[in-house]
Image 1: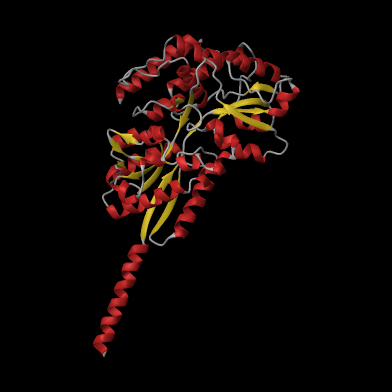
Image 2: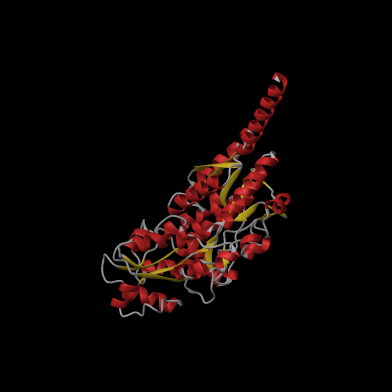
Length: 415
């Protein structure tokens, strides 16, 4: 009898250990989210953890640039987080450092299919012929405009500006004094550079040579793109020469128009007394093009297949339930959400959705390894420095772009 009891106890203990092991797969996920999207991400993780008992996801939030540098350091120290949410344009750099794990052999087992996603967002997850990322979202920049101020200025709120002439005309009519401007443009940061990239693409211009080894933007098209932005401030005088927070300027009616992404929609809806609408990024130089991005879910480099599969289970859940994420201020990467009645009842989001706007006009940072040095403000890139010099009238557009060419070529040579 004692032997049988001993066997039974041993079996129970073994089952408990097995159950604990099954429930004890912990996945660390890093990201650089900070605003409404951070809250939505946490909400979704909490829902995932509560929906099953096999995987527990533990999030960590950093500033984007800090997360990237921390990831590189973690590779050198011999360990990375199991999962990350990352800008797609930084993925080539991180894959080059050996920080990311390909997931090709995990897709079928995780039940992830290419046809479920917006085609270009899915294609962007491939680096060097291997899949490193699953798209969590897509977005492009669009136009926010104050419909009340449009009406007061004699502009039709149902006809937002599309062409260069329409945009300048609307901005002039909306500029009524020192506290109300037609448009707000940051006098620093990487955002004006992203506008410039869109305007360059609208002219058929190129950032770099096809081999990504040298600059191709210092030409008539690159100069025209920066000149248009400069003229809004210095010639047409429809944008303030010093502007640190375009979101606040729009929310407080100091600016009739701004160019930004879908993450401002909820803040604008919450702003008491604000009447606004959204529209596609204006076709200043004729054809449509807008700077955009996609966040992708990626695996950190580590050999534990059980953890890899656990992370993929988490990724699939996040994708299938990403309407929660979209409502927080993103655009869908998943075809079923894009086609859903629920999303179709959210017209304010249409302007920011590559799946609705022409995908061919979705302009992303070229996939160079030195993303942070060229396309972000910290450390200040030569392109950001060029815009700052133009705004402050320290350099002409020609001088600023020539100096940016030298600076970016130097960075490209160091890759």
